[in-house]
Length: 345
Image (cartoon, rainbow, N blue to C red; front, side):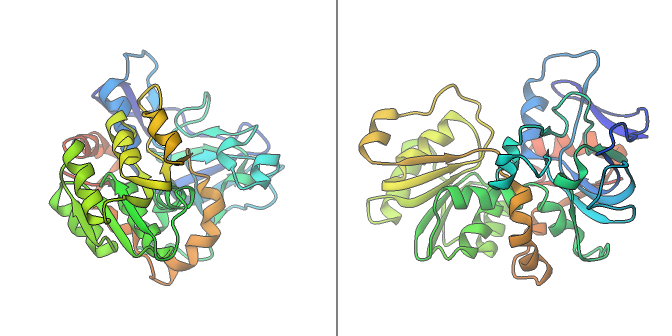
């Protein structure tokens, strides 16, 4: 089968690899219908050290179950499923608490040893019963993009909003105008925020953020951006900040635009050593929360809004490519020519 392998920064290839197969009784084999490239995939695209074996890429997918192991009970051949970016058993104490990304037997597609990536023709899904979410709909082409976002970016944007304690009538800022940030705008609007400020500077992304419910745009960065947000919020800042970038500057901005007693939900994979600044955060009683989103826990809540068209997160996909064109998709996202690339094997 064909799959995407990254060998070093900037070196992405689609190669023939051994077919994905079931090797544990709790596995399922899923034929990929749609996959995509994530903003977090751009971090290794920029800085991955050379590796002879390469890294299997991709952690977001929807597809059809082709086979199941003998101990799989909830998933069957022919099911149309969403594959979250993390696999989980569904039975440990953290899964029961709705935190599947902390599953004691779980891991992450494309990162855990022996588990392949989703930018491929097929993928082996460990712990299938706890991981896969069976969709109650057929493979409607019009719905595929939105359903695909449930594997990561829509659930991650929602997680940022939940951990930032977005509430009805509240003031929200979203740091970052990538797919997760844009889905964070959807989530904040869905939870009833009155003011939603998007911090971004790319015209197409800003236009989409406004369509999703953003009320204000701040394109300045650093101190200028911080002051602009404060002016838009009466001088005090926002109740909730959704940090979807993962850089130190983004986190610093997030903390400086949070009002006293407010909260930051950080879902951008952190590329900094510590959370700054600790003293102002302490004296302002700011809560910092977030992390890898347990998107499996959010699917049942978000799916009805997707199916009924109340939210349209699939609009973050502005480019669709075949599997052999995945390297072009990485370049397009890295050069900000695409918001998010959908892959059609």
